[in-house]
Amino acid sequence: MKRERKRSTLPKSEARRRYITIGEHVALEQIQQDAKLLAEKTIAVGPFARLDANLVAARDGKTRGALTNVFGSQAAFQAATMALALNASDWVDQVEFPALDDFATADEWFDGLLIGQSARGPSHGAPPAVDDGGLWALWLSAVPYGLWSEEVSRPSLDEYVRWVARLETIIKQALDHFRLALRSDTTANDLACALAGMIEGVWLNQCLSTRHPTDPSEPVSTVLRRSGRLLWRGAIQPLSTAKRASAPKR
Image (cartoon, rainbow, N blue to C red):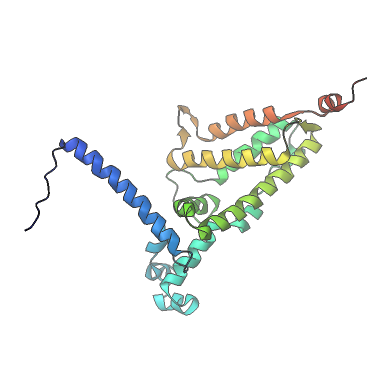
């Protein structure tokens, strides 16, 4: 005897909310399943899985066969494109910091650094471009798969370590140039990690708006400049103060 399914007695609004919640859970499970497949074979996920080799070849005045000759298949081409977005270390190596000699004070130099990092990131509404901001946004689309896939998380972390190392180096150079020191409970690596996290956190806002999220009268770069200023001033002190603090008491 066929068993009849019970008709839902929930109000329509509650039923919608229930199914949406279930849908969100199923979407996460699908990402988890796809992420686990990456450990078994190289596959493209997220937007990379929709990358059409025909469209790519046409941009170069060729047919899909041209890409197949180079990569072997569309799937291999998709995976190779994703791999570049997951670890764009070459772009990290090309980042230029403001010259220390161009600024009278450390605060002015650091503000210039933050302005440059905001400009380097994504910009809401900007046309698609293969640059730092565009590649970061592509990487962001694959980040959820990193929850369950070492194939995604490993190259992303390698790039992060490289980026923090560059920031740590320029921070040490700036401290020496402007005769400053870090507070006793802070290291250059601490400051570099905090700065790297702050930059990418603000880049999330830059994906969504060109204005300050809570103060529309200001550009979105103000978020990074003001927050970064607090971070910088809380971490440093004059070199003379640091020497007095470390001197043995008589």
